[in-house]
Length: 369
Ligand SMILES: Nc1nc2c(ncn2[C@@H]2O[C@H](COP(=O)(O)OP(=O)(O)OP(=O)(O)O)[C@@H](O)[C@H]2O)c(=O)[nH]1
Ligand SMILES: [Mg+2]
Image 1 (spheres, rainbow, N blue to C red):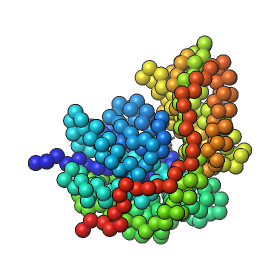
Image 2 (cartoon, rainbow, N blue to C red):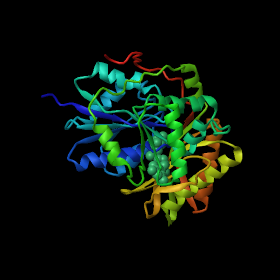
Image 3 (cartoon, rainbow, N blue to C red):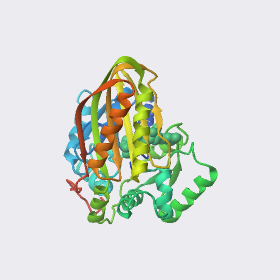
Image 4 (tube, helix red, strand yellow):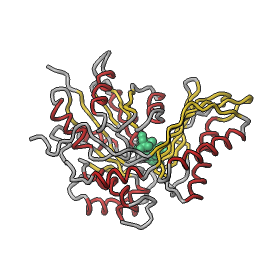
């Protein structure tokens, strides 16, 4: 019998919890003796996510430089490279959080061109409560423009299931409101409640993902002009550097301080952060700090608990602002945080830009019959 790879892609807006979910799912499948490969994706190189998942011991490759839909062939060759030694049983794929129309441009092409090789799991999309609630309520001032909100809605529209994440933080009233809004606006789409952090709700999620059937069929009716303009309103920055000090300092404090200082500067300028993330890597140790909206506090999501004199730092920031301004702010906050530790910074590279118009390799406007 030919070996089929289970293709599980988990979508959701920037900072929704995709990487945390994939890490948990990878462990779940590995614990059951399955071979797992993870594919990350970004518009540029130097991905916090790739390093976070690799540091957890997973087998990870990335499609960097454009989203899966625009680099469909790279997605396929990346999966091949993950299976060079031994074919994986499961591929976990994380698309870029500002990407949508993934059913027509990724799932249906896999289904229609590579049917013998893959079986498609249901396509879940994660809702981040902080931005999700405002967008679903139609509140003015979600922090994003109507075009960026359009992307978030389209992502939910093409989902086989919607995952309300971060239930560890939600009150029963908040949760009920989100469920009601989703059921009203996306009728018929199953809604699961999960916490990627604690693992709550993951039994239901893995049960959903194990279902056999014809999934990834909700091809969107979508306006690519609005989609492209919505994406282009975001400033994107990926930066990598080495930080060196004469005295040891607490790595976690540096990472958190970078995110806190950046958060303060963005708030002062009135720019909404979709996701700021930074990872510090030193000799197998790593720490990660994040900010996922202007309403939430910066946090150390994965502590390293180590003191370092040298560390490699990667910063990924997605913010509703001009990328040049974002770059200037990042440069200032890194300099300030390092100065406080009398550390020096050696910049490896910084890429900052607005994402370009999506130009999918394939677009199947009809689901396979
Ligand atoms: N409290 C809580 N925090 C969570 C949960 N899931 C994710 N987070 C945190 O939310 C932040 C973003 O999570 P990620 O998994 O990196 O989100 P993402 O969707 O991969 O983000 P992008 O790749 O930038 O689009 C991190 O600080 C996580 O630790 C959750 O269930 N509860
Ligand atoms: Mg991620």
